[in-house]
Amino acid sequence: MLTIFYDGKCPLCAAEMKSLAKFDTNNQLILEDLHADDFQQRFPHIDPIAADQVLHGQLDDGRVIKGLDVTCTAWKLVNKHPWLQILRWPVVRLFADKAYLFFARYRHPISAFVSGKKRCESCQTDRCDL
Image 1 (cartoon, rainbow, N blue to C red):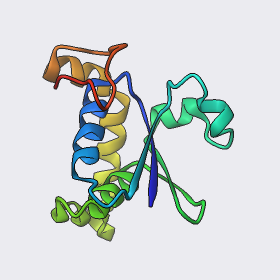
Image 2: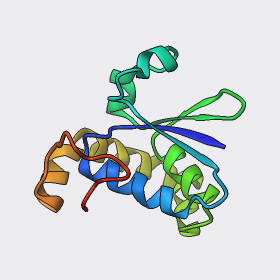
Image 3: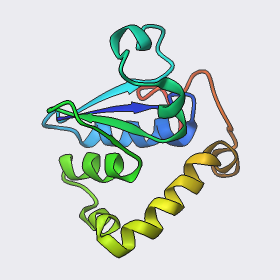
Image 4: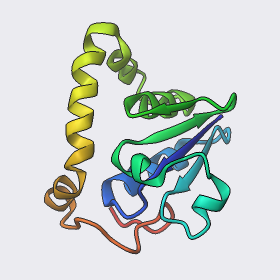
């Protein structure tokens, strides 16, 4: 089981969560929008500012994982995109993590380029129109 703390106002992030939810037939994922009104009350141990900068996830044992570790774990749990595990190989990991940090930092302009929407109020996993 993995809880993913994602930016629900990012069209690309919301679209990925929508895809993950569609494939999560064994209920292995819990998707939590950082912008939910009660987020801080329910997850006081997760800094929403840090989690907005780099994707955060929490495993069943309480460990917090970040970045591509979250993405790769999530897709592995839903049994899709097994090739993503290559991104966790030692040498590849170094470059993949740097590329992820670049993407995370510039995801809103990238999202605007790809989808035409930089940020949105209505993007949620069940309503994102990407």
